[in-house]
Length: 412
Image 1 (cartoon, rainbow, N blue to C red):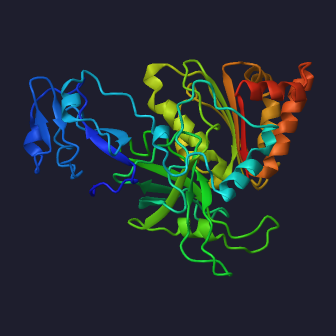
Image 2 (cartoon, rainbow, N blue to C red):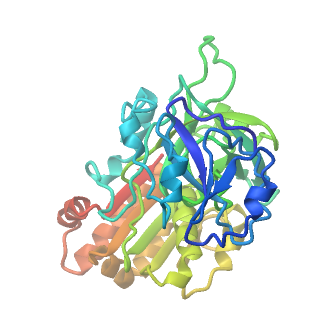
Image 3 (cartoon, helix red, strand yellow):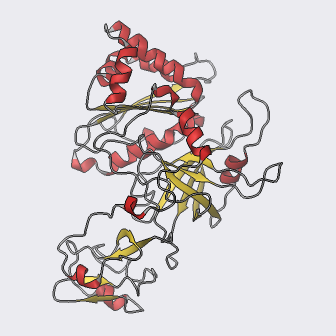
């Protein structure tokens, strides 16, 4: 890892977890620049000396050395403070740093968000137990540079949809994200009028700890756009740029964005997830977050309705199939399988009407819809039919769900 290149106001501070450190002195012996010192209680890292060479990471037998906090650059934790710790401090609230314009979102981000969330029926709140999101830390005028560390095609070579799993590494620059958030990518070059390309938004497909935990990276799910909504040839500037990225390429990133399409953290909460195509990205992030914490037995049910043209065009199809049924209730709909009738997510929702109604009326269940705008009306109509069959009115239930922060829609 290179020396830090953080935002002017924020720095990532390398720390040692005193709870799991066994005081073996390995880190201090391995550090080539004497950034690590100790007293009779703790081993600590000097903020003004550490250059993130990472020579100490691998040899540490417990992983205590692999600890990081985002801090105000002018107020890092001092050596004296660290000497007195028995546990690591909670993450600093970055909102007080006023970086990247705070909630002053770019106009294009605000417009896209308003369109994407229109199906909710009104503004949505984040679940009461969701973690605090950081928003708009990096704007177009001060983007963060990320490095591509992976680009893998998810769909079959002969599939009509070319969908990629892109891994971006932020090095020493803080880019804290939560499941359900998105980021912006600024394609290089200019449009036909000579104006720089506007940023394009992509949902994050990895959980908050990163695609590879504790390596300050994340993943995206991106479909190469080759035609417009009418089926006419049209080359998407950003999607083709992203899908063609090579390992080692540098990318200009803005964000993160999103403060309501977030997963709940409280024990027992269930998720009803409905998606098509690359709308699987936030669902993959939430599912992976739960998968990594299965041993804690803290989550409720996961029910997924996932639609694509065929099994070959379903992003993450293989990994999802390997998850045990006891962990996630999967319902896969395919609309273009030769010799089989067309099936959409709303068809499967109707088939599982009892289960869906149970989750719609469970105050511990949170509903997430993400994908193509075209599937939104079908899903909402299925909800309406299911509620009607149970003697309930969907148009009355939906604002109640919004008021409880239980209903979230992002369609494009």
